[in-house]
Structures are given as structure tokens and as C-alpha cells.
Image (cartoon, rainbow, N blue to C red; front, side, top):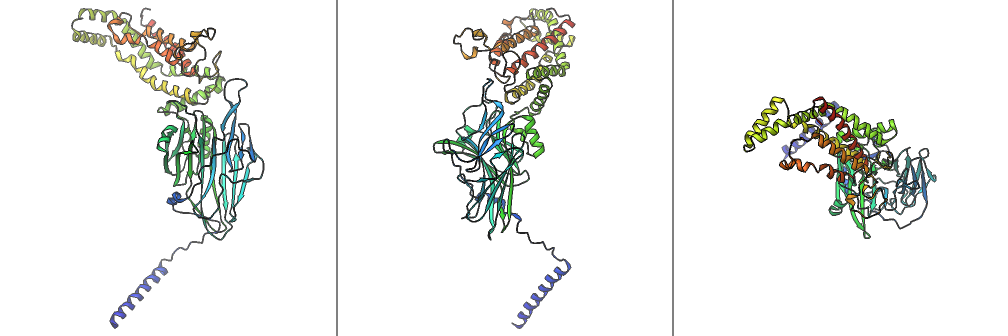
Length: 557
């Protein structure tokens, strides 16, 4: 026993020597204690345990104290009850092209934004949708931010500073001061709520939930989320919002913060379809006497490329330009929109800008189109010989094809060359179609005459003699002058391209192609007039180029 005790004592002494010896040889770097005002992060996973306030639907025609919003681009107000953004009007945009049209109303009592403070400690009062804040002034302008304030019974002071720039961006700075003896965990967040959104939209333009989480665009339509009810993300930075065809409400949180929880939500509340876009920042520990602060950007405005891109670059909002639905051909659509915007500024008319753009595009594709038209001209010149081969070997299709291919090879003609410009122009056409369909730069942009909105179909009606014959006609027949002009130019182009000696009855494909100008005329009659004008002018340029090439190769009329 004595030896055992001696062994234990020896082990303890050796351990102490090692511990203190290591401490003397490699002293530990002592860290200064955190000041009382520091904010220390809690584990990111605790964001799920923070109680986020549920949405409270506003009463119809609810009144109360407000702060007015006044700028060159925006008007409206912020309701002090809940500090809610529920009244915002775009001063530079009209509902219609009518002279007495009202300004576009965006945020309303059915489409609003709230900023929240959540707490993980029980028994701590936080601001809710029923909280009445006090404001340091009654008007918010770009030159004059406002500060809202509220204090709970425990002594915590909540402040919210709201600043507005010259365009459509609000900067929301939330601040919580802890005068108590206890440390409390707070989390900041924001919610965009829409009640019974109009069921509209097309497959061309995305309308509904939109955001960028973990550098990835995340979209969801209202109808889809109504079935799924919820879609959640954990992200590092990004932004989240709800979008219409031309307008966007979005909140951009700190771009470097990891563990932000973002949600697309659907709820049936009081018999209403309520769609929410929500984010919650990771909780932070607010020490005794400390101050916790968070900054959020809130955009409510038009999806104008120049404005959106400026915010993306200046404020560091990740991929904010994807709020504009550029589609699959992003690499073409975005440059096209830039070019059209620049041309519009240069000439002062978006319709003229479209014509110039079509001309520049035709010049750019001139070498490719020229080869195609040369191939077509040579093909037309060979038609008598091809018809002779068809007559000579009309009972031997294999020999007929062999002789025809030999003729093509001898004349150095590639029958497929005429299709190359078509394949190149397909993505160009769809990209321009996307630009004219989704970009707000086209909205209510006039051309000449009766075209007052290049994003809308041609309003003239050929089959009612421009409204002088008010008889009822099917909607498919209600087409304007520009679609008819487009159909005529397609017909002329087809006549110049089609072999003059081929019998359409013997060629089913050629017979079907004859109807394409008529089909496209009625189909395109209901598309944006800017797209129809572009196509018509592009056809005219093609006809001129093709006519020149045919004359060069001596092809008869």
C-alpha cells in the first residue's frame, strides 16, 4: 500500500511539473475580455429556435399615425403601428397611357413589408405588428432619414433608422440597447407579405417568389407554393423578395453573414391566401449594457436594368440583376437590353432604337446571311437541271438523289447553307422577344402613329377597319397593321427563297411552308408590337440583301 501511495504521489508531481513547465516554455496568449458593448454570435443552428412573429393581417381601411414618404420617385407613407411599409406609389410610372392615368400604386394594405426583432429568451417583450412606434419627425426624404423608437417594460430600447436614396432603396438599421443585468439573444429579420395576389402572368415572365441564396437563383410561382406551402433555405448572404412583371419588393441581408434562414411561405389566414417571403439573421448575444445592430436593404421599385445593376455593384447585392427574368439566353438578353437602352437615350425613341438595333444586327450577320443567300441563288439557278434529273429518273429515287448530289458538288452548292442563318437567329429572336416582353424600359414606350406602347400588341384592327365597323370578331382575328406588314414581308421573302420550278403538290413540306406567313401573321398579332416591328424591319433588310445577291448571280425574278 505504501508503495502504491508513493507511486500515485510521484505521478501527480510529475504531472504538475509537465503542466507548469509547458506553461513556462510556451505561455498561453491571453485574450482581453470582451467589452460590455460587444456582440457575440451564438451557434447558427439556434436560428431555428428563435420565435419569429406571425403575420397579423391589417384591418380594412385602418387608420393611425404615419410618417410620409416624399421623393422625386416615390410617395406614400410608413405606418407607425408595426412600423409597416404598406403605402408606396411610383411617381414616375402611370397605370395606363391615358393622359389622366394615376401613378402606379405598389405597396398597399394587401402587399406590405415588416421588419422584425425576434428573441430566444422567454419573458422579453419585442415589437410586434401592434406596437406603436414614436418617430423623431413626420416626413422621410432622401435628405432626411427618420428614426423610430420603442421601449419595453424590461427597459430594452429598440430603434429603427430608415433612410431613402434618390431612387427606390431604403436602408433599414435596427438597433437594440440592453440596459439590464442579463444577457439576451436577439435575431433580426424581415417579412414581405402579399394577400390574395392577382392570378395573372404568363409562361414568358416569372411572377411570384424570387431570390438569390448561396449564389443560386431561387424562383417559385404562387400557385406552386400554394400546394407545397413552404420552401426553406440556409444561405450565406443574398436577397429575397416577391416580383411582378415590372415591379419588385426585395430585402437584401448582410452579404457576408452565414446561416441566414430564408423562407417562402403560404398560409391560409382568415380565409385569405397569404404568401410570405421571410428571412431571419443568426441570433447574436446582447451582453449587459451592450448594443446590437443590423442593417438591411429594402428595394421597392421598377426592375429597370440600370438601377438594379447600380445597386448590385454599389451595395454589393449578390446577383441582384437576376431579379429581371432574362431567361435561358441571359448572355444575349442582358447585352441586348443595354444596347437598346443606350440607343433609346441616343435617339429618344425606343421604336427607332429597335430599328437601328435590327440594322446593326443585320450588318453583324451580313457574312453569314450573304453565304446563305448565295447558296439560295445558286440553288434557284440549278432548278432547271434538278427538274431534268427528276424527270429522267422519276422511277428511281436512289439514282435521282445521287445525280442531284453530284450536281450540287459540281456546282459547289451546299443545300443546308440556307438554314444556318435561321439557327443563328433563333436565340437572337428569343432573346429579343424576352427583352421586349419583360423589360420595363419597353413599358408604355411610344413609337409613331397609333403605337403608344411597344410592350403591348398593335391596337389597330384591320378586320374592323380600325374600329369603324364595330362588328364582333374572334380574338384571333383582331390584329393590327404591323402584323399584316410582317406577314406580307414574310411572304415576299418566301417567294424569293422558294425554288420557282418545284411543284408544291409534289413537295408536302413546301406546301405546308406556304401557310407560314399567314400563321405567323395571326400569331404575332397578339405579341408586343415592338417585336413585330423588329421582325418586319428585319424581313425588309433581308429582302433587300437577298435581291442584291440574286441580281449578282443573274437569277431571274
